[in-house]
Length: 285
Ligand code: URA
Image 1 (cartoon, rainbow, N blue to C red):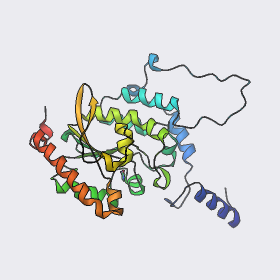
Image 2 (tube, helix red, strand yellow):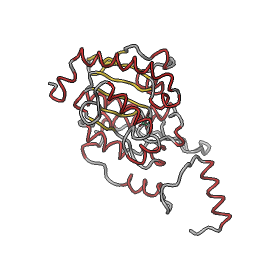
Image 3 (cartoon, protein in one colour):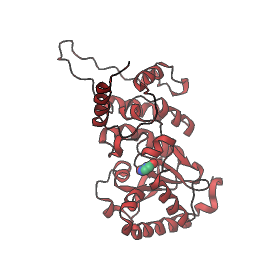
Image 4 (cartoon, rainbow, N blue to C red):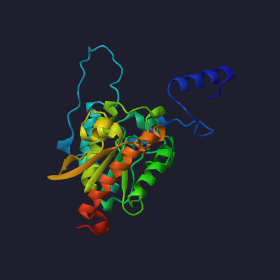
């Protein structure tokens, strides 16, 4: 379709109003068509829900007034996410399932699914909020400015992603303009995150910032109240200590708070030492 100049400007202005904040490619890509083609592709056998797990479809009465299609992130999407995540028995399967998942509108706007980075066997798991622009482009969490600061925070206590830290986010696709994820978006991603935690079986979890603390721990207190104190996450009959701390993006804006983050890092370091996690390393049994 070719547009004249005023049509092209109108389309551009519409895209800006809709939240577009950068051009990724020279040529437009129709992601709705691409997503529909992908959705039509058969799901791998290992990820298909069992017949008993498939819930009956809701029938709308024929006389019901026509309504917009229910937004993605509804209870059906959450149910589907729960069923699919439960059937994943490895991190590879979970990543593939997220990449094949079509239940969240955010994904249609994203360049990549951002799954995780680091060493899953180290059992030290960091959970952030959601990918930003650079993470969306790279398909990896925490690679932008906040990620560089996170790497420095890790290094300050002898951690790095190549040997002894594992990093993921609550949300696997970038929210436009880096807005906070909505409760529905978080609720749809959470079954995947919970399964992710089960599969990694961490010995400690560090949640980065208020949004991660809210969704992982269900705590709505401000991060300033939560940070620095160990909480408990229960998974498969095991209690995992969780430390909420300040998000590196917040520390980039409020450098004065780095002293609080430093205290939290020392707590984390002590816990890692008391559990002997670095000595046990990847050989943990
Ligand atoms: N902020 C996050 O919470 N996660 C990322 O991956 C990057 C920035």
